[in-house]
Amino acid sequence: MFSKKEDKMVNLGLNSVRERFDEGVNKALSCLTEIGIGYVNERKEPEAEKTVVSIKEIGKAAARQGMENAAVNAIQALEKLLQCSMEQNMQEMDVRVLLSFGAIGKIAAKQQMEMVAKLAASVLGKSGNTAALLNKERETIAVIIGLGEIGKAVAGVKVPDFSENAAICISCLGDIGKLTAQKNLEEAAVGIELMLQEMAAAA
Image 1 (tube, rainbow, N blue to C red):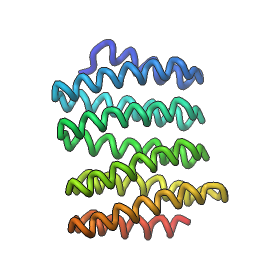
Image 2 (image 1 turned 90 degrees about the vertical axis):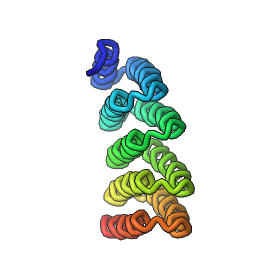
Image 3 (image 1 turned 30 degrees about the horizontal axis):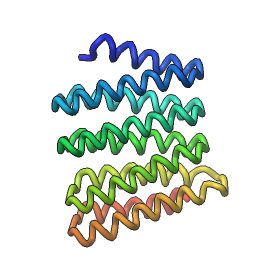
Image 4 (image 1 turned 45 degrees about the vertical axis):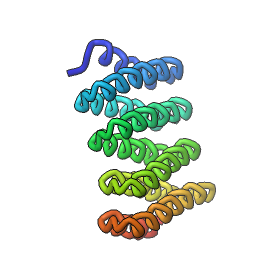
């Protein structure tokens, strides 16, 4: 169950996206991030996960509308929640946040919002290295899925400038691949191989 304050902020965020009102979106994201961090610190995982979903939906809506700043703010909000979640060792929450980066990045890539797609891919790459080093296979697989989604979306956009974003996704997957091999994370290593094949097919 959402509190009235959360409901109000979700509505503010989505309505502000429709009205292309950056300030309203940012206020909603900031407030939802605070609420989410509170839930994480209290170890209220289901409530925290709902907050993640709300921020993801606002971020996706912003990306569809071409609102670059709002989409970037959504990714940064999720990054803060991921940091807290990893400190509290809340695996389900980590996975949900990591998949959210991929969801926003995928839409951004389709909308040719290079900066947003690049940010999402970079955050995923960094998180994937951390997860692989800590032997967290589920989180690593979530990163691979996210990077693959962005990479395939980038590959499907016939704009030459986007080759840099595709290269970032491939480079991140390659780095994570080396770590998964060292750490014997077999499922993750296979996932990377499959994702690179899918990206090549999309291109």
